[in-house]
Amino acid sequence: MRHVQPADLVWLIERELTSQGVTSPRLVPADVVLTLPVQLKGVLASAHAARRQALRDALGDAHYRTWAEDQRTLEGRRQLERWRIKLATSGMPLTPDQAKDLLPILVEQQQRIAALPHPGAVAGAAARARARAEPTAESDAFLALERRIDAQADINAGSTMRCPMS
Image (cartoon, rainbow, N blue to C red; front, top):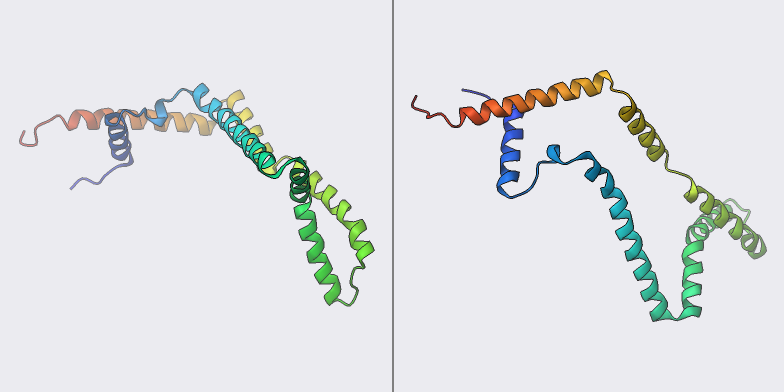
């Protein structure tokens, strides 16, 4: 009895994709893959702008500005409320004046944190740049594996054409 190999599965998946008129992900040009995030970002930005405009139309300018300010300060107000509870339970509650002075500081700090690039995004971009700049043993091994999978898929395709009785 023959065990199913990974190359068999790749071949079956690609055959099913082809029968449905879908190109195998392995055959999609790299420049197409690289433009997809940019296209998605544009779609999301236009949807966000349309949502904001619909809110402005529904609320009116004055109420929309109030809503936008509430959204901008939401995380700072949440953090202030957590601090207010912690300080109250420790016996040193915040006065209303202290809370009023602290809120703009917390909002500004939240905005600074939100403006920082995500560490994973920076590391990922640097790794992708290195991978494009120079082939590594890992990329060579990956290409060799991909070639073996292709060769096995060709062998498998040829073996399915044989009559089982021969």
